Length: 109
Length: 180
Image (cartoon, rainbow over all chains, first blue to last red; front, top):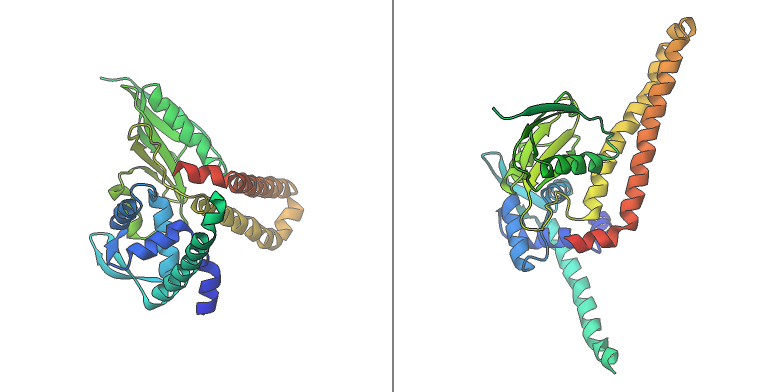
């Protein structure tokens, strides 16, 4: 099951990556948009449709869960499965970064 | 009393950007959208100041109650919600030169198109058992068959157009990302 999710989510889109990162704390939809905007200093402005689609898919796949529902608003949080997948992605990005730092110097030779 | 005008504009579900730009142009010409009726093809305008407004068309097979509130909180105003079809028309004023988007990456835009093409495919497939079940009627009234052929060709045409649009989106994927 997890194998299948890893295959479908990794490598992650920036959209999925930042949504999961943002949901390490409980947030509702609009809260995620604001948080991702701040984290990327305005570079990523999540569209409402894009966010709604990603949240539905991740909830269905068990990466995130609804923890609170009030006034037609849903609040989400990352699940253990979601954390596992995000850790894998962070390890992948770490490898990208380490290799970049190792080789970067050659680009200036 | 300001001038009102009702306009009929047919659009295919495979080219929602056409109706998006048409509405945006009407607003720029000072025709402000008041209401959308008649399954999303009858538009009521009111003469006023020209405005810079972005219109976005969405398609959803099923939504939960969080859908509308998420869009509204993000600043979108719902102008049309199809009662029997899955179409939504949203609008938002420009912030400076920034054109608001409901889909900020190409993948989710392609997903929207795929949802509609799935609906058309299901409609197309169920025509065949219906046709078989009505076999005796078709042999008595051959023109019924013509109606079926026209309907199926129309559905097939729609599916082809959506697939072509999605291929175009995939090709220009990089450029789209630059806009976000």
